[in-house]
Image (cartoon, rainbow, N blue to C red; front, side, top):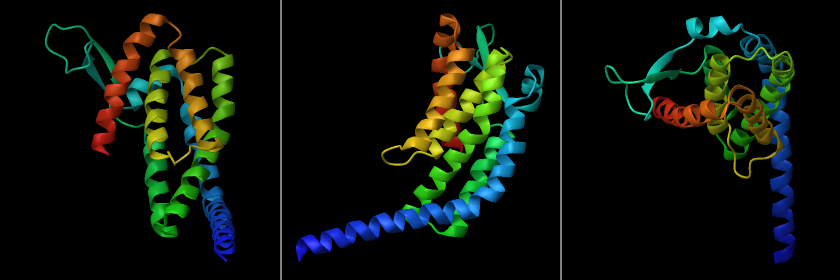
Length: 200
C-alpha cells in the first residue's frame, strides 16, 4: 500500500507539472512571443552608437569601487535595458495572475526562458557572424542576461535555463575575446549585477 501511495503521488506530481507547463505556455506564449520579437530582438539588432544614449551607464573605478577624482575608471551598465525590465515586470505580473504556487512559478520561468532563447538566438547569431556586436553593446547584453539568469533560475536548471546560459556565453566570448577586456569587465560586471539585484 505504501508503494502504491508513492507511485500515485509521483504520477500526480508529474501530471501537475505538465499541466502547469501547458497552462503557462498557453497564457504566456501569444503575448511574450510578440514582445520578444519586437523588443529583445530589436535590442540585439541595435546599432552600437545607440546603446550609451539609450541605456543607463555609470563609471566604476578599476578596483570595482566608486570612481574617485583623478582615478582611472571604466563605464559599465547600472540598470537593465527597458526591454528586459519590461519582460521581468510582465513575467512577475503573469505569476501574480496565474497563481504563486511553486510548480506554476517554475513553469512560468521555464516558458519565459524558452521564449527568450527562441527569439534572441537568431538575431544574436546574425550579429556575431557579421562581427557587428560592439564591446559596449555586448556588455549591456551580458548585464541583462546575468540578471535574467538570476530571475529565471529554477532548481535543477533544465534545458530552457541552460539555453539562457549559452546565450550569455556566446555574448561573452564575442565581446570579451580580448584577455584584458575579459579581466577588466568580468569583475566589474559581477559588482554591477550585485548592485542591480539589490536595487530590484
